[in-house]
Length: 188
View 1 (cartoon, rainbow, N blue to C red):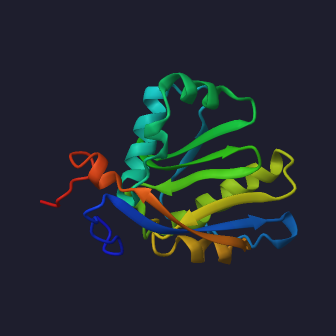
View 2 (cartoon, rainbow, N blue to C red; view 1 turned 60 degrees about the vertical axis):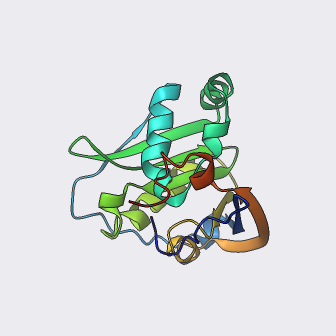
């Protein structure tokens, strides 16, 4: 688990700070040079619930993502089928590199799998996500990140031109307490 994550509390709560950001086309700073490996991005036109849950888990588990676990299969299928909702998957030689998810003017989820972090793929993939979002006609792109995400996430978004709109402190149920086997708590 990332070192910046606090240990679980006895009450099963996890305090985080969520930062909400927005980006307008004129403020976008293209940062991402093409990676030194061939990364292909594909739009998944009709992702199945099982495919999506696996994708979400493989990218998000290290950062304690769990919100999509709380949604029923029926509700998730309906969300994924919305006409304004897109899931784009990045792969290298068939291996999952990461993905981004767009919907309703928001970069809903964005992330890389652990083997591809630190290889300068993140800024490049973020540029592709921003490019796609603006191609759909949104006038501003929204996103949020929190203190459990990668320590450089907020800085990466700000360097791309996102500006902070607001911050909010929240207490969530700690997924390491809810699902200790999935989130390997206590660590081995």
